[in-house]
Amino acid sequence: MASASKALIAPPTPDEVEKLSLEYNKLKDELLQAMLASTKCGDDLAPVKEKCIDLVRKFGTAHAKKSKLLHGIRWEIMGTFGSSSSADAAAIENLRLHLLKVKKTRLLKLMFEMTPRWTLKETARAEILKPGIDDEIRALFALCEVTGSSTPKLEVRLKQPA
Image 1: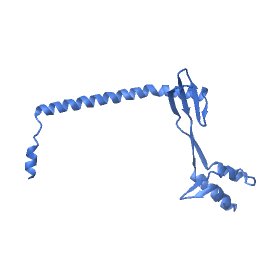
Image 2: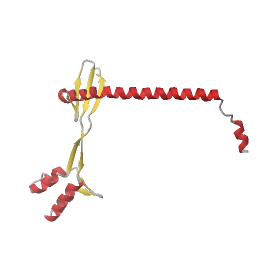
Image 3: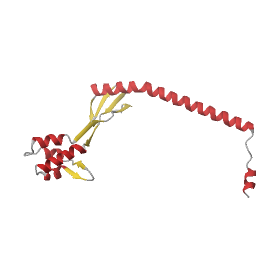
Image 4: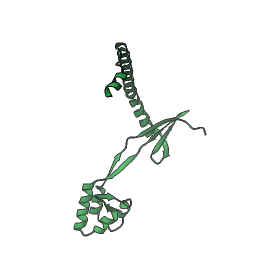
């Protein structure tokens, strides 16, 4: 039965193989050209984007919490300059050990919550700034939070009619 179904499908003719091969190579070449053009466009765009970000950073007016706006006649450029914070587990552990040593573990529980690792609570800064916290503890806490810059986001758009 299996040989009967194979007999129904005829092998391609040499002419069909030639046409398919030509079509494949033509499309493959077009794809390669498009990819090369895309790379060149990306290379051309990068310095212009950097110039936009630099100008918005230097001369843009406040737009939102982390955004600035640079106005043209019909166009405007908005840059968003974010940052991120994360906790340094080793620094937190160092603070935890110190708080254990000076018998102030209650403070640890007020500033951090225990998961498989210690993470900063939103109220941590307020807790560490309260009166009665030793400078050494504050200094150790300062090492627990790591802040880094995010890649700026850029949007170039037509102005909205007023």
